[in-house]
Image (cartoon, rainbow, N blue to C red):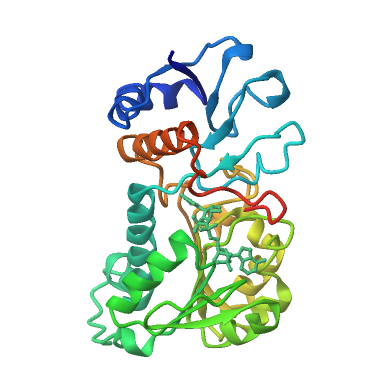
Length: 310
Ligand code: NAP
């Protein structure tokens, strides 16, 4: 008897996943009917994007688990109707994309590329940039994505400090953990990367107080979530020159409204939440593997801790 897998996401996502998800389930040995319109009372699993029209999980009496297509779960983790396990997306393609975005933007600022790309004014400025070894980088959030970015940057020679709740060792990375250690993680950071999930504890992690701990001229990269930053405090620090540049991929409101001061600020680069995305082929395999595990009575991978919020 096939199980029923409801795909609850925007129509475009279904176009992307339709060629891959049924095949991945078959490959995982799961006999499943996958569709966007299955009667609620026979749905076994929901493959989910938080921006889908499904918001009341109590309508699905047979539901065994919700499999989030996104890494971030802030828009579903607190849903009071969700009484089954919630797994989030960990996908090799998503991680690889984030490593590329972070590495690319770190190198842009480290090498001072803008001076040559934007400043073709006939002036021969032979300022040689420092080596990576002289450019300390701090990453806030050392989970799936932060740790992978840290390893890539260590591989290029950057001294990397990683801050999270627990200081799990990562080769070559100076570890800091917990609120008391945050100022120490910031004071050396010539480039700061935010890869925390958005939770009540992490909201406004970067505020006037923490920004003041960064060295003069530090660069901020935020591919995490917009709510990690107090926008007004960041703008003030950019205006004063204390922060040299901010490259922002995520925002409190997306798309970033045209009138938002980030767009026109000379020290801000806006990228439209493209740092990384789940890649349907590999992400479909991750979802299928979790459904296989669910059907085999095994614990799901990448379960969200509802109390912790990520
Ligand atoms: P993850 O594996 O859950 O890692 C989260 C990290 O943050 C962990 O190291 C965790 O510490 C740390 N953390 C959480 N709360 C903390 C707190 N209060 N204080 C200190 N550290 C804290 O998440 P991930 O897969 O790396 O993803 C991170 C975030 O990236 C996602 O939540 C999402 O918002 C964002 N993202 C953005 C894009 C994009 O395109 N812009 C794409 C994908 C993901 P422990 O290790 O000690 O638990």
